[in-house]
Image 1: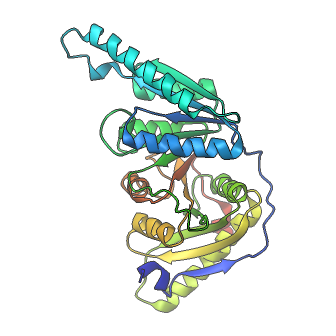
Image 2: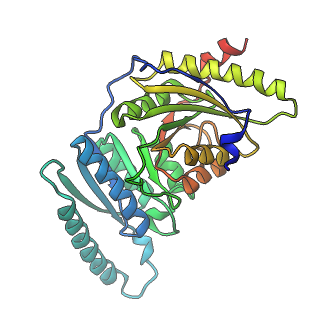
Image 3: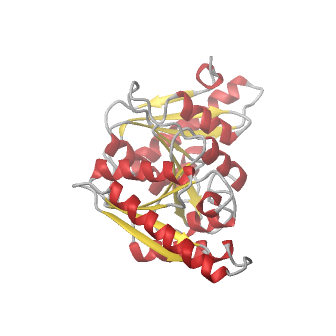
Length: 321
């Protein structure tokens, strides 16, 4: 039996009617998926294509030929040209395979330094969502493993969806699970909650907002803190977001934050995890880089990240004072 589901310190405040929240217009009209033709990126492209099919969105497939891969080879220019022709052909073939009457697919072939070029492509294409896969050590597979990932996720002007090696395709035998939004009330929580609520509404699945706290040896203290956090989460759902389906708030007590988020998502068969990202400091708003990477790597579902300027939500101050 799961340790998360049986913990008495996991409390929830549930609202059964949808919450209609004031938020900016959110949409999936233009999706940019990064590929390097690896198995990891193939899973990401597949999930991007599913989103586009559901929303009738345009899909752009981005491949970047990185010169550093061949710079030390003999006849590097010749080899690079041949590799470029091969990759361009593969990219165009993939685009043709994914093209449908409702989904237009645009192949984008670029070359140069991955971080610089992908950020430039994001600015020029202005997608509503960037989709990447991560697992290995080369090309786009390095994403969420080092400085390239941090630069993209912190600097992208749109949400980024990452499909990690722990991703499990949804079972056709199970109903779609909830959107899990994890926060510590820092870095644009209202906007992140709005996006999580948007996903909940679009996919017609419940929204679970969770906050992970260190477990105290005093059970009474656990319950008091849980009540405070539930109130803050509930207030956040009311004051920011979009229309969420069956929103609920949960306080989770655990020693390992990233593991607790992943275990909770696994237990409720989450459709996706949503995290806020600090645009100015070291990666994630509520998690250090190592922990955020662990969530992405271990998560059984896609992880959406949104970059924000640093601030603390007034909801936390008003609730805890």
